[in-house]
Image 1 (tube, one colour):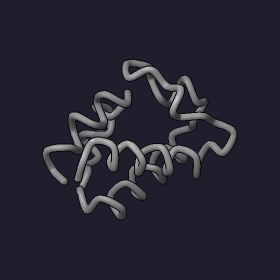
Image 2 (cartoon, one colour):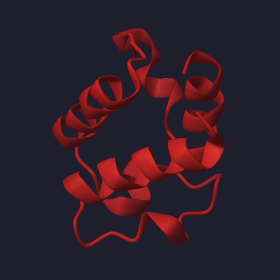
Image 3 (cartoon, rainbow, N blue to C red):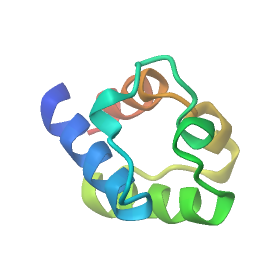
Image 4 (cartoon, rainbow, N blue to C red):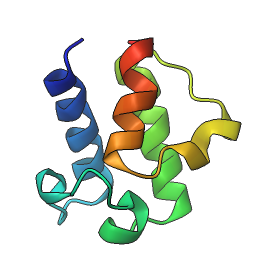
Length: 80
């Protein structure tokens, strides 16, 4: 899966939990939850959706590592 395809999956998932958000405008180093005002429950739903769309298992211990767009891409890219 290319980085562009992975980004599209991330952006679609973010739009589902924060419909008013424009994830394309996120800087790669911005904290996603804070910038888009996403609570922990919605972020968990987002991570579950990522698992369903990419097939990548994300253990709870790794949730804190996925706080920026760059971090998500670095984490997911080698696993898809």
